[in-house]
Length: 265
Figure 1 (cartoon, helix red, strand yellow):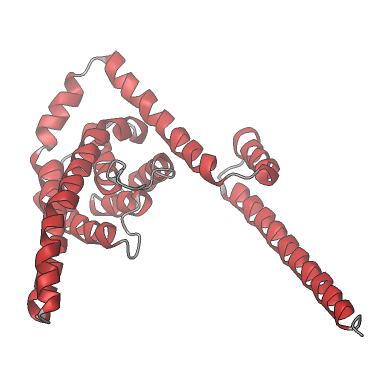
Figure 2 (figure 1 turned 90 degrees about the horizontal axis):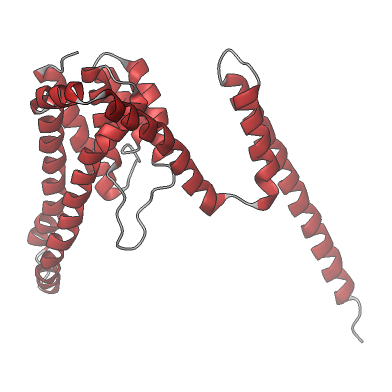
């Protein structure tokens, strides 16, 4: 399949919006689930976008910036996963592995911006000290504009400009290498979800995890909606039980406080 000029421009425009959102962390439009779905809709294949979005979101589920570290860029990962699957005919799982170089490229560009924009802070301090609000606002907005344009230009060049070289490269790959990318792409969602569980999983919630895993993997459903309903039901059970425990603790605390009040002489 071929990405048209209009589709490339629309994906570049969406990359600008998602890039600004990622830079400011406002609406979380930069998450791979949203990026892949929108990219799939632009390319006329929303099903591919949704499938790729689910896999890529799991791969990035446990990857968050910590201190000075920056994980691979989720926007370029989402865009290129869908585009590579669309243009080369590879599965979304294989496309995740093929999209990582683009994601890492954008990661390094953003890291460069973090360092380069630090030189602006002294000038911003001077503008603030002299109450030059217009100059302060324009200089503070400049990094966001540069980042937005970078996302749009790079996304357009990767999606539209590099599609023929990428298709030729993928088609020239031997079967064992192509299969290796597919295996790597299939493993990445499990790794991402494992990283998420490492920081969030509590011992008392392990039974829920095992129950959900069993329902999703060993019980034959026509789709995953029953598993989602089971998950919501278990979440509600835990929520209402927690509310009940809090009320009980409050009652015990109030009763203990009232008993103490009557013990003085």
